[in-house]
Image 1 (cartoon, one colour):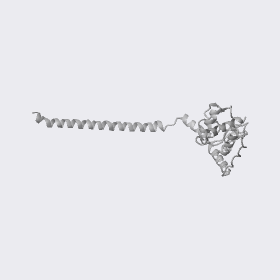
Image 2 (cartoon, one colour):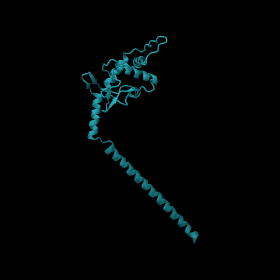
Image 3 (spheres, one colour):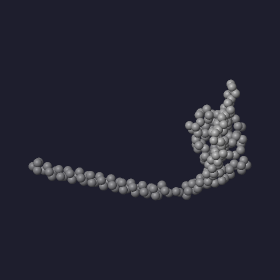
Length: 208
């Protein structure tokens, strides 16, 4: 009797396995279908949606980057469009000689002061294209009177100009953007040695 029941049992087992596989396939298909529809809903109703507040903020930021605006009328400081700032910087670079004159060697036995080394770096590394030493307005904040003052940043916060802030601004200029100035300075991380950064800081500290 057992031998006669074997084939039907095998057929039943096969049918059960086939049914389980079929149900599993249906469940996976349904999950994929709903997952796709949820993603589509999120994409059209959430990800692509811009609230009025976000649109207004985006418009304000565009205006800041692409428009002219007084920063300080008394000092004659004007915020200029980012594209214009880049054009002025490129124009300044084009007027520069292709070679930079070597800095005069110090007298035998005399070592240059750190601020003198910093001034050489200011000239040879093209810092003078944006930063002035006499307080005159430029593409970027002047070095004169900079150390120790409080700067207002683009996000409305304020920061005291100390050695740590200057070093960060040299190596990563976009970390803290000063209000009224475009982010046109390239990062100098890997371009200047630690002692050169220290020399530039010494220069800024010397310009009261």
